[in-house]
Amino acid sequence: MDVDVAFESATPTRLDVHTLIIGCGNLLRGDDAAGPVLIQRMLQRGLPPRVHCADGGTGGMDVAYGMRGMAEVILVDACRSGSAPGTLFELPGSEVEQLPPLTGLNLHAFRWDHALAFARWLLKDDYPRQITVFLVEGGSFEVGASLSPEVDAGIDALIAQIEARLATIPAPDA
Image 1 (cartoon, rainbow, N blue to C red):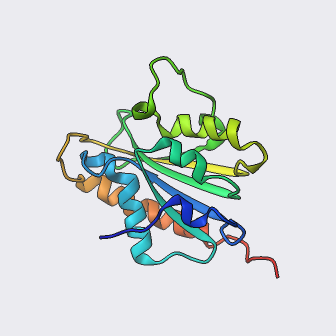
Image 2: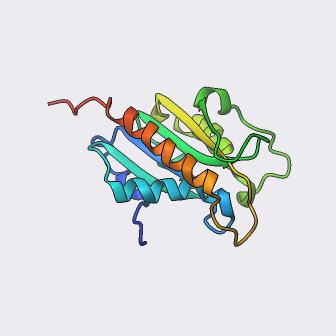
């Protein structure tokens, strides 16, 4: 599926976009694909007005710039906490936007948590008012692995949760 979800598409005005949903992860590493798969499915289902999706892939720096001027950002990624695969976690962005240790950091290791901290510093008043991070517990992150059935089901459950949240987005000002 060809998904045109470049961050730049909403950059010029941002006035019509209230919520940006960013899916992070690597489609080639099994359950690490949770974020991009969620974005693909949401785009296939159709988005409500004032919502934009972006596949953040593994490009943390793009994630930081893509948040500029958004009222709300929902960030989705896979995680490894030791919980059962498919388990969903919700974290307020304020709990994870503190700058992680920078020792050995390079562009290949620049994750979404780095992106939040970097964006807080960079965007100042243009930093989103609300950021929520949803994590889907993964089981297999092997190169070439398929998405596990548990994570597949977790993604669908998360889509339902996000869609319910999107139904509360205020209408644009007249």
